[in-house]
Image: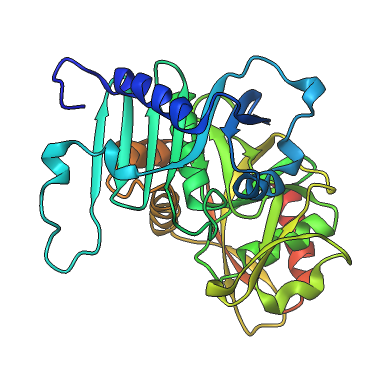
Length: 345
């Protein structure tokens, strides 16, 4: 990285050698299918990657289905500070900071290192992506959440695919994005639609090609609900994990339910919880809803300063009509009103 003639892609050539020398040649692998492409996750630690497998059960290929992958993600541990250039590593931390972040990008790849925490990288030339957790740190929920999303983001960016922090549901193959801050009813509404048999893509993250039909594509095959909404689930839906730091929010395996692989998106809905007895969908200001959706999406993938991605997302979504969905406490009423609305799109 300190060699001016080197590129990030050539740097990751050496990273590949380091990975195999440190961990051994006999890595494990898991292939998943996303947006018509096959990604291969390579790893050594079964415990850590079991969380990935649980969240993507509906996307995991059997051994008999394995093919030459379109892209590779390395998942491993190391001293992440070795990936920071000496000139940056030797700088003192800013006053009051407990860590800092090194970032680099060129035409061949990108790298982001959070000191003593994690490294995320992308080799655009070889379509190889990296998530390295600091050796000796706790598993916590690494690779099931933002780190994994950021690895997918690196890949999706090169495939001209957007990853949106949004739910997506539909009826008769006409769908809506559901965008809201946490606690506003996004997951509860979308999971209610899933259980009532409506078209379902996701309750939290969706993919969308930047050109062509504006279709929502699924990513995870899990759903997440706050503790006060567990009663809406079918009995015995497997629990993938519980996040105590988020008031006991649980993530459930929904891979047994049908997911729509492509759902044409006709509008954006912004749900709000109200005290009213009758749910209602009304037009609302497009600008503020789009700004919140795009900002949330870019923040989830660690790209708050990625102005190019902000523009790409805004350009893709700016023509969609936007509505406020005033939810009632009656979940079935909410679903019926939404179904009737989508019939008229």
